[in-house]
Length: 333
Image (tube, rainbow, N blue to C red; front, side, top):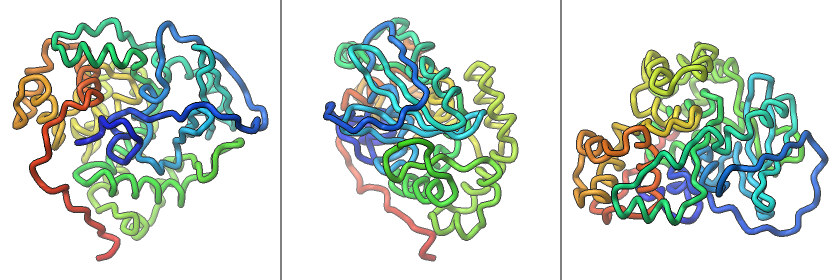
């Protein structure tokens, strides 16, 4: 998580949830799909809202294009779909293709933070007040899809972000399907649960995924329907259901519901860097642990995830004291 607050789209910044959407330039009109517009009740920054859905700059399910649009693919309850969203004069204009097009358009307001309430956050620290002022377009996305956030979160367990992003790219491109509609090149839809379950062990190995993470994903996709049903639950209850699957703990469940449920209060505990970043920003304590982090975030109960996002986006991190975690590659063993 260290460095993911930065302003440019690198492997480290994607998890921090800020994607730089290029300024608008002329682009040939794509083939028409199903369309919808939605006017948000306040400022909206597509890069900030949808940034957490991107897993690295080469994510085959996410793309920010030079015309100012954000593209994403998803496997919806009605099938695969491609969605393009752009802001035009304060209104979100969306177009979708594929069997999942209607579902994606119906979910559009939730995905852009319609169910989020930024006004519920009351900053009690100057750093958070300044971050709120500088990021008025921050809203928490709610995708309504669990598996698409759970699988990459499992891949990110106890490895570098580069390793996790590489595994995600390789697996989605090899076992997924091409994005419907006129999507940018090399965009793919994630595999169906059954396809994930049938990936041979050597393909996980080639993607650099160890047996522990691969087994966790296999257990999760076998109960995919039950996990998707957690969308009817409150985030805390949904986390409890996810953690019933062996290999899914508080870190993974929090990273998942933050995206799938728009969980404003789900704090990522068990992270290598986040406690030190929060401790440094709010109390000058770069050695803070999870308990200290939760204590510092207690005044923001109900909005603790938003507070952590704002801290990451503020850039207030302690200077690095140790070398980067060494990258491994089990595919070479």
